[in-house]
Picture (cartoon, rainbow, N blue to C red):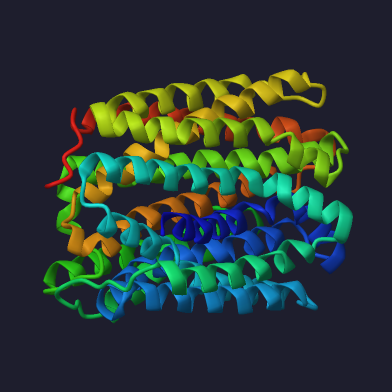
Length: 446
């Protein structure tokens, strides 16, 4: 059962990053620039982030296996549409549809695992395995994408999903038991609409900002609209008996710090992956495969350290793994704050390894802390809130990194990306604050 759930998470994480390494090839094939390419990545993550909480509630209400399998079907159909997309508009729409399917997989898989493992230590270790697979998929995306693009073209990064979807559907029918929350929750449509507006407008203005102008009338209207939607979301959610995302949960320092930590970790990861792709392919002239292979240290670090982190969380709590994560991510970002056209490749690989190790140590304590903050019956919603934070961080990271290098030619790109590496280091430093707020022991019964 854990293997089946991890297989679905591998798909979700892979499609968050596999497209990154293919962006230059997609741009050439469909004739689009940086803005269109950013939307190709963020159409997926924005929809995924917006719908995760509702999908978790749907799973708690109608059955986790049923929603899980529905998500696989939608995800597979959208992948095929991406593979045959004739234009960037169709590709962006298909990526958004992929996000709908993925939203039914991420929180539901975690809820299935949490509910099947009542023992606290076993649950922490299982979350460590889950985080390891998710970390592997996020980090391995560029390597897999680079190999596929070089051998079969950019459309192959979407065709590859088909056999994995079929296998997951068959295995989930055989091995995953049906489960649901004892008491069904109502859907919160007003809250869902306002959350979508907040996330979409916030990230959209970051993508379009370099084109519109940060102080242009259109940008100022977008800022105000996002702020009003955020205020409206909080007011609506406070008054609803069964809110989409209860703002009162964020009064708990442990829970709120875990969610903000998830945002920071995924901002750092996605800034790293996008800047790596653009720098190595545009500035250094590397092939997609070579650029993807350069991230192998990141993948290895994430994969090896995630289960170690899970065991540490089960034994001594989340503080030490979070502090280690913060230290490694900070060190990795600082390695590249002086990036130029001729930076030693060994320094690049060291930075990617450090960031990968930090990423591996971060996921298990963040996930376990957030899930432990809610009863097991609401595990779908707990997992969804954490996953929403991750995907929102992914979308923010892509938007910020793309904005930094928008319009920069191959010669200027390395210098333009330096603030991005400072941001990566700052995200690592923030994890020290998260570690300080975390409980010294894992409180799985809270």
